[in-house]
Length: 186
Ligand SMILES: Cc1cc2nc3c(=O)[nH]c(=O)nc-3n(C[C@H](O)[C@H](O)[C@H](O)COP(=O)(O)OP(=O)(O)OC[C@H]3O[C@@H](n4cnc5c(N)ncnc54)[C@H](O)[C@@H]3O)c2cc1C
Image 1 (cartoon, protein in one colour):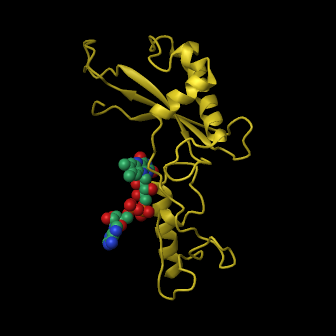
Image 2 (image 1 turned 90 degrees about the vertical axis):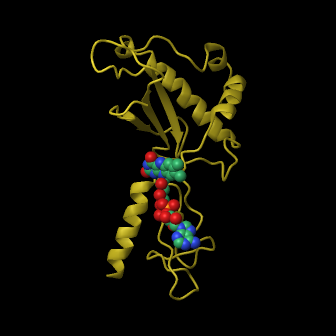
Image 3 (image 1 turned 90 degrees about the horizontal axis):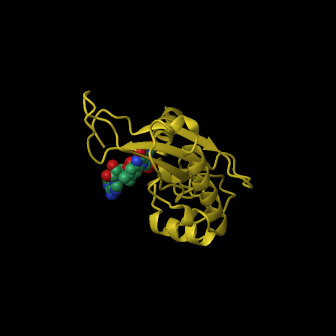
């Protein structure tokens, strides 16, 4: 990507059709430059746009990307929504053609699942390995102030104590967890 171009220029957050998990999907639009187009200006015209669906509340765990049918369904819907959005008249002046996935892939759930299995990656929002919750919760590791249940004097204060992944990029929340618990400790 060329310096000076904002990476994420627009984002859509929504609840996937049929999902009980509010705002479980994000679609990010990203400009990228695979070369330069000389239009007489500063020459920084991006040559491509990707629409990236991000499944923030995945059912699949660990490195088992898309091993749950509900995750595959939500991402298929999101990809087809990306294609619909990109075909809006507002994009006509700036979009030439779709590179991938092809119409043939989009037309078949099975083919789209195979495409997703090849293309899927992580957003690196690793979290929830050391869940915050009351001592009565057998899966909780720390209290609301990060105190490890059953071990005096030991706290964990980072992204690992999120009970579930937040429905956004995790860095700001991780910093706020630190600031909030520091404030509580005085
Ligand atoms: C490649 C990548 C891209 C990302 N992009 C984004 C993004 O664009 N936006 C966003 O919001 N989030 C992003 N994230 C997620 C974000 O970085 C994390 O959610 C956040 O940093 C988590 O904070 P943390 O304090 O839990 O852990 P960390 O930031 O990982 O901090 C842990 C710290 O502990 C230190 N440490 C580890 N072991 C020891 C030890 N034994 N002794 C002493 N120190 C130790 C490490 O060196 C590190 O400094 C990205 C993550 C990655 C990996």
